[in-house]
Length: 182
Image (cartoon, rainbow, N blue to C red):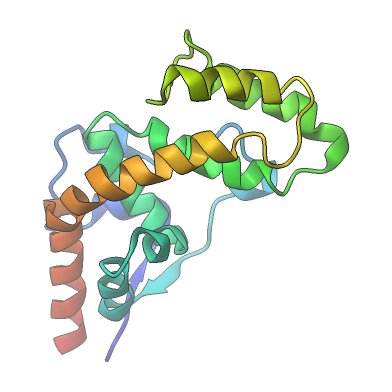
């Protein structure tokens, strides 16, 4: 089976992909809370139809794949809920943070996503919001775990099933399957 070469940040330029917004607005999601090395432009990767089919097995498999994160992020952006994957990715990055940087990074994540006035406020209950606020006063690598689990479950039960039925996913899969037949 032949794999199609896809530059992950340029998925919005694929033929046959339908986006509800202007493609210029769908550039790679800026994860400003991630380490600089994570933000560097990724090299071209080969993506096969088999890999994209694996994304349909679980949200975990989708999020374990960098291109899957990008495509799912574009889908969430089209639904105006990209804060979910941005928060989830920020939490994953936070878990890898050196101990002496935890306080600063925890404050940034809290202000960006958890605080009741956050620009990209995530949909969590009041109790979890308050519990997280207390935990970041003495931050550990696990202080966002409860909120992250809620957001993961929200994506898994709500956004992910719609993603698998979306034109974004189905057109990508169809294009890769057609390319593998050539």
